[in-house]
Image 1: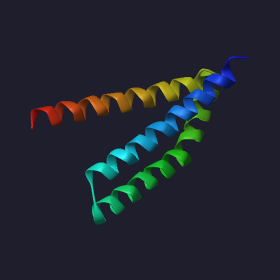
Image 2 (image 1 turned 90 degrees about the horizontal axis):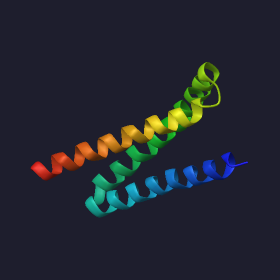
Image 3 (image 1 turned 45 degrees about the vertical axis):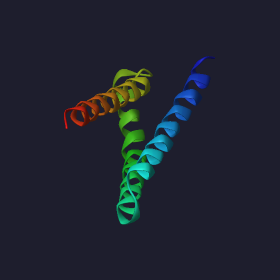
Image 4 (image 1 turned 180 degrees about the vertical axis):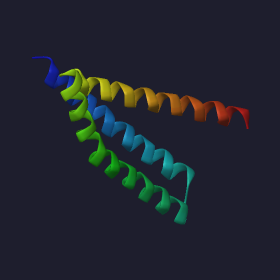
Length: 93
């Protein structure tokens, strides 16, 4: 069954994104700004852990097993769109 290896890889990528975001945070901020940024990351990670599974489960009840990959793909699309937006804004300044 191919589903489990795919989910393991997707989970590893998700945690890799989080780790790399923390590395970026640490390279850009120092002192209290770094502490506040880390707290914000932890808060958002926790909120995602609370809201994400029930949201994915609800979508799976509506559209079936494809609900989980649909939620993951949608969140990935939002992440990519935000990264492109920030990159474009940084390039114009």
